[in-house]
Image 1: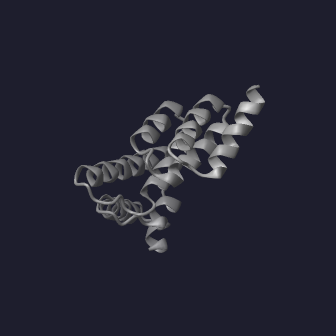
Image 2: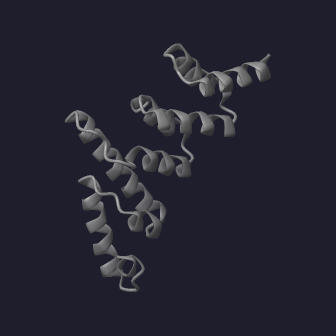
Length: 143
């Protein structure tokens, strides 16, 4: 598979990209697709494919394929579009790992108010001690 992804033959690369896109739309996300196709246009197609699969899974009340939320989050972060990232998070905020990743991202990007909102919600819902500790750190910094 790596050979096809790195092929000098543009037609073969394009065909392999499309095969991987189809597989991803059906819940089979291939690392080789994400690692070897990194142009802005390719990233945009990858993100759209993954978001569509997440949306379909939710509408059919099926579990979201493993790694799709993480990958979508990572692709949104690389695009550096904060509003899109926040909208994605709001739609998928029940995932614990995604919540932790969002808090970390918020703290790294000086979005403490948004991180505080997430952590406060976690604490109110009986969240972890870690959430409580992070919330206390933010509140102490804000005084």
